[in-house]
Image: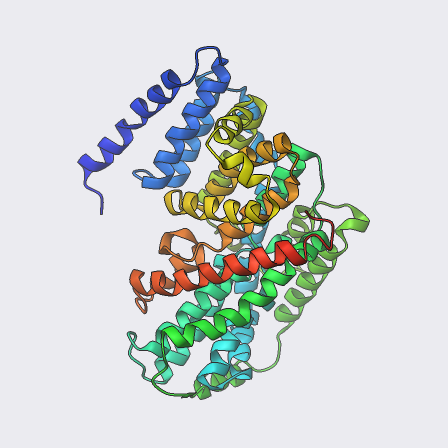
Length: 466
C-alpha cells in the first residue's frame, strides 16, 4: 500500500519528467511534437507506478493534449470514436450476458471433466478450455474469470493444499493458457484489436479475422502442447489422478439448457459467423459485438437487463480510448517518426533489424524488455508499435510483420504477475507466488521465442509475410 507521501512524490515527479523531456529535445522541433513526447513520457510514468488509478491518468492525458497545445481536442478524443474502444466495451458487456446464464459454468465443468482422470488430462482440459472460449468470448481476463471457479473446485474437492504442486500446476496452467488463447483470433485479445487498428490508421491496411488467423495459428497451436509439457516438469504432481466427481454433480444439477442459455448460444454463434465472414460483408469487428450486446439486452429476445450489462470496468474503456488518442497524437505530430529515427541511430540496430533472422529476435527482445518496465499491455502496444512501424517504413521492412511480432510478444508477458490480466486474476487465489510465476514464465518465454522465430522463418515467408 502506498503512503500518501509516496503518492504525492510520484505525482509531483510528473512535472520535472515533462520539463526534462521538453528541454532535452532539440529546439528546432515543433512544439506539438515536443509536448506530445513529454506527455507520453509523463503518462507512462503514471501508468507504470499507478499513484492514481489508470483511468484517472487517462483522463489527465486527454486534458493535457489540448491544454499544452500538443493536439486539438478532436484528436485528444479520437480514441473514443474508434472501433477498438467499442469492441472492448461490447466484449465486456457480452461477458456480462454470458455470465447471466449457466453456459460459462457448464463449459468450464465439462471441459475439465472431459479430460479428467489423470492430472495430465485435467491440465490439458484447463489449457484447452480458454482456447475454445476464445471463439466466443473476447478478452483473456473474462475467459480466466469464467474458468477459475471450476479449476478451484477440483483443487478443493481433492482437499489439496493451495501450496501443492498440483494446485500450482492447474492455476498456472489456466493463467498461461488464457494468455495463449489471445494469440490466434483477432477479437480474442485486446492487444490484437489495438494492433489491427494501428495498422489500419498508419498503413491504411485492413486486417480481417482469417488474415490474423493465417498469420498466427502456428504459434497459437504449438504453444499449447509446449506449455502442457513444461509445467509438470517444473511442478511435479504429488499424485497422478484427480477426482472430478464434484464437477459432474454440479453439471448434473444444472439440468437441461434453459431458454436463456439457448438464446445466448444463438447470439454468440451469429456473432462468430459475422466475425469469420468479415472479409465478405466488410463490417468492422466491433459491429457484430455491438449487435450481440443489443440482442442480449433487448426485451423479449434478450437474456439480461441493461442494468446488468452496464456493470463493466469502465475505467479500462477510458484508458483504451485515451491510449488510442495518444497514439494518434504521436503519429499526427511526427513524434513517432522522430523517435524512430533516434532509435535507429543506436549502434548496430539498423543492421540487426535489416537482417531477416535477427529482425524477429530483436523485436521480441525489445518488446519483452519494454513490457517488463511498462506492464500494461495496451500501453506497450500503443506506444511501441507506432514507433517501430515508422522504423519499418524507413528500412523497407514489412510493417505488418513488425506489428504482429510486437503484439504476440506482448501477449507472452509470462514473467511478472502484473504483465497480463489472467495472471492478475489468478494470483488472487494465493495458490502461486511471484517466484513460481517467474520460474515457469522464464522457460515459457524461451519456448515462445523459439516458436516465434521458427514460425517467422518457415511459415511467414510461405504466406508472403517477410
